[in-house]
Length: 332
Picture 1: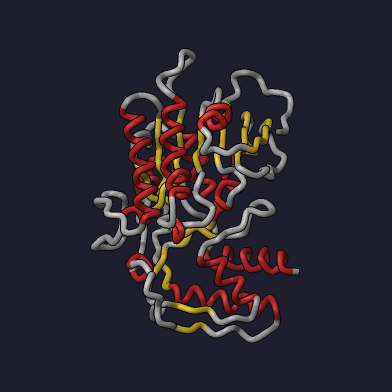
Picture 2 (picture 1 turned 60 degrees about the vertical axis):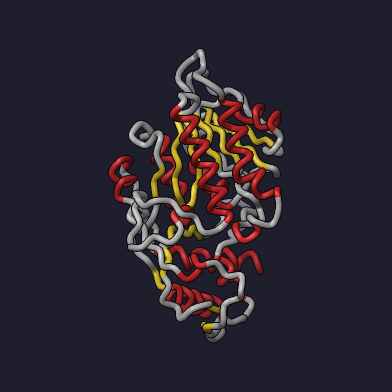
């Protein structure tokens, strides 16, 4: 554990759980620019850039309730970005993913308990998933749809969100769930790798391998750069009151056809390497492919934007170019 001299007692303590991950490192870097006390907690050491915050880095197994209690002790704000490291496709393969994706939230709201003597309950921000909705009948989705999750990962994310909402209704915490779209971009810290589809395809293109689709390329995804996602968490901390107790969708408002996205990746990698663009091919899907892989998603985040003033600012091609540059540099 590393620490600096404390700021004055009135400076709020913001604790980020899962601070070493892809989204977590970007959120932690964003908070490091604020005049707060910042505690970055993860299973492995977090890399936090210097800034106005007085930063403390801890390592902990957050599935251990005693370690979790110590990690959040005294926190005014807790940002829970903990997710099973093997990703959503492994979520149904055993007990471990559920113990992380659901168990940590259950233990967190229990640890934080009721209203503190020195003030109101702590603010808890949770990283949900837009895919918790399942297969909505219309686009765009805006968070008003009934939740019918299709995958075990999304069912686990929904259960964790429900635990947070119940604890908020009971007065134990002030919970806010930000449901994330398809997030991508350059990593904010060494080792904070993105395991999503965009970075996966960039790595394939850099290796000279074709980019494959399980459909004709017209299926759309709402893509948001991780830098913009981090700024959404800051916006939620700055203006939490209208958000507490609800779930809020983050998105660009545009559904990008994945065929076009993959062709842009191939072109940007070719510009970087000087080689011809790799082909983008349609291939038969595997038998285990979930229905959500073939369902388009566009997100209307008007409600969150109006409540906080947030909006995504990094253009898609710029974010893709930065992702290519970062991953090409990592290969060099």
